[in-house]
Length: 212
Image (tube, rainbow, N blue to C red):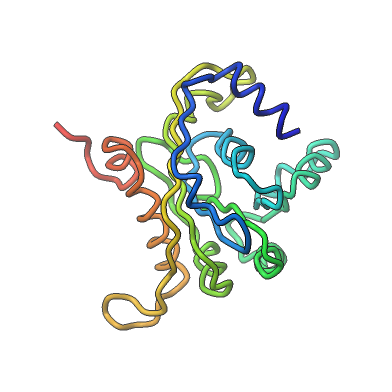
């Protein structure tokens, strides 16, 4: 399936797809990959290019309601999470994936965010990072919302750039010397993700006005 999707990607996007920093993904052992989510193809484009087969994903539970799509997602190492709730089952499964030495891809915004404003990141990713104690790998995507916009079925040709940053660790305390909470840990991770974006995209997703 990975090979088939990569062929389809070459046909649709060709050289319009740029992926930088794959060398920052650990070749063995656990790691938490945290990214912004601007397009439906973000997890697929990242997953098929990572040189490991033990890549797992968290996805909204709505995607598992239909039998066929639920079967497909589960066989692609994806497990459901109930959004806007403390889904303890999903959090335990996420920690178990990392405990077994695999890669876990998480999009803390929970859904595709408005590229003009970014999305509100949820504290669940911070919970996972603080409890798993594994390397955090930031991943920034730009332009992927132009390939498969909301409501579209046929992909379009658009430039897509995915940048993978260097692994880092979430600190135990904040700048004021207080214990770092789950939300603060998530915000810190998303700041590292936004720092990898091109200038205009970085300003949009941080809520800053575009440059004059």
